[in-house]
Length: 289
Image: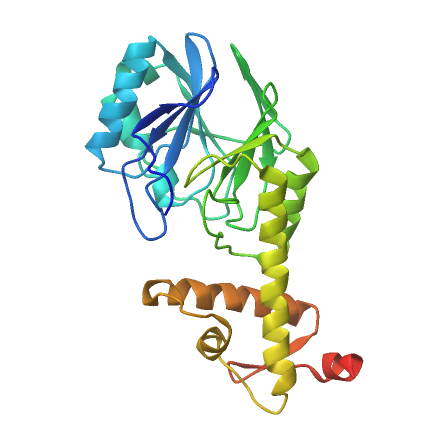
């Protein structure tokens, strides 16, 4: 069982975590939001979900107790549990956010909160407040607009939903996601602060686990298709054959993950799709013999 995450935690001299108070199947104990810096003007990473007064109260209490304002708010990606609370933060804590800039990496069909000016983040962009320098790294895969933030002073990474404190992440594009995991590994971070779950103290081991896990899933899919090359399978069929003791509430997410693997394999011409069902490709079957 995962360790309980308190509502507010001072993780280091530069980082305070404020839990989004929005627990759920996909959010675990809730969305982690982070206040970063050591001076009067600091940074907030992500804003939790909308209409969660408990989160707003905790965030306001921290800002008041520390005597700080927000210089910047960074949104890791478009999912509601990371951007949903943005308007509430800006409206309910006006005295602490009136000179704050909001930033997010652009997305093709962004639906941003009304009456909020959101500046576009760029890959490699750096921001500095007292005690903290944050470098933006575009890490698509979980979503097309996902970014992680590298805290240079501590060699720490705020990983959003690219890497979680427990379990594995879902993604929109597996090819991009695998590349993003490698980009984070290339940093060799000393610690990872995830968007959900507890602090990751063994970053390289965790990243390698994620990469290996995805490759093992791919191999399992190919084994099922290769051993039944005259048959066609839907995602739900493959989930039942591959996943053991999967809770019903996670079945849809597992089917989506299997689909992403199959799309990647289709691009590589290792599988084919006929009438919505999947088979191993003749090319891959011949090659494997």
